[in-house]
Length: 202
Image 1 (tube, rainbow, N blue to C red):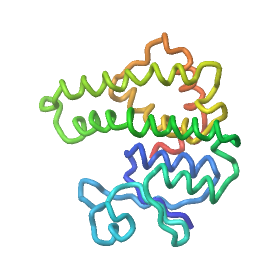
Image 2 (cartoon, one colour):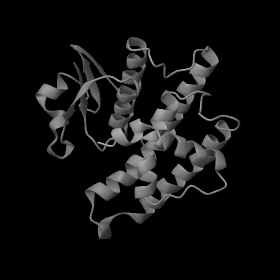
Image 3 (cartoon, rainbow, N blue to C red):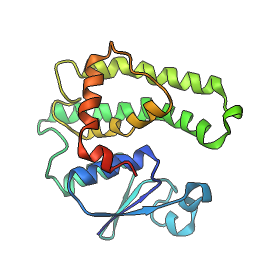
Image 4 (cartoon, rainbow, N blue to C red):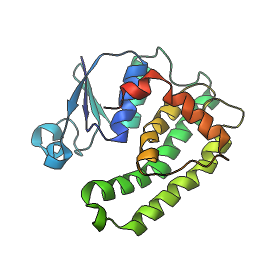
């Protein structure tokens, strides 16, 4: 049995949930309460030495970091495939996933921490506004990458899945996607229509 150690609201935990669901794999959710620092407990540190989520236990084999977990799942359970067959397409998918991980998601994390850890009157609006501006800057790259394509790497892939995890937060944090981003808006609707989007919400 596959076990996924996760914090349900974590976008990176959801990234793995979507892949597991898309591949039709049965798995057990093991929820960790970050507020109680369960991710820093001695038992969990034996699973993930850096005390982060998610981590995955596949019948005794432990792997952590959402991107590495999903690459492992693609190798171990290759059907249905979530990476293009050609090396150029695979590289494009990995580049876009890295763009999400390194240039988009950290700013969502910044906003999320302000909302989660502080009452409304104590949130640093300047920090929130700066993070939102950085998120919006990413839309130009996404729009151009989607030109002439339904998905970021041509076919539905790990790259699209990475971005799916942030869609709810765009709405929650009131970050509009301007109508000028026609490719991006249509792409988002396609991804939201996938059963894995709703099923992975928790």
